[in-house]
Length: 298
Image 1 (tube, rainbow, N blue to C red):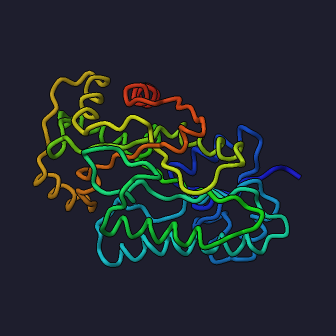
Image 2: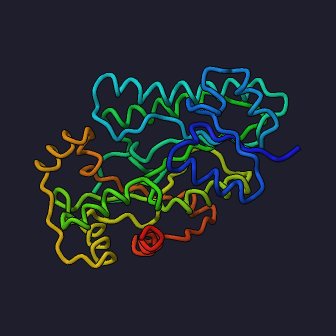
């Protein structure tokens, strides 16, 4: 029997990358999603069959937060995380041969707005508001399950940078059109992780069986928004970068149906537990990361 990994919600930017990388390692990939030809959410028998005898379950499911926070969207953002996590937990408890590792997405937005210092897992201060409430409930339902033979790891993921999706393309387009200056006052901290490092973290958790609980998934070097945009301009060789004041971002966000806070919030997340465990980053700083992505993207 071939070794298999279950990717729940594996149809997005991160899921596609993970599927591609795990296939190179010889794994069969089973995807649970709402798209055709996948195991369907709501089919508990098929979910159980998929998870039985798997080496790992990775849950990336959840509606994107890149939308307007209407009451309807907020309800779907929450339920798409809670219900999928619950469905996986219930299936794992029923397995005769459950996976040794269950990795569940979470988010670095758990921590408060911070320009003063970075937030670690042990000393980070939890924020307030809609996004924070989502993360608390999400991790709450995840750790309410106690499967006896399955380790649980929650990934508090920050902004993922890669060449086939995520934040790089829209930011690169702003730079290309001369609009790549600072956004807001430019002092808000930008916590990020290269998609390859995120994948390597999953392999690290698989290998290190002593690790469980919640982990910050971020580069150790968060940067200011103004530094981020300057790095883009330098690498793309664009001299002009007009700044975007807060009021302009609010109008733009309304037009493209998103939230300006996704750009204006200051998140400073430090991967202390991973680094103490001995994880090494391939792309620890922003110039290295963007050089890799923008070179492949051209």
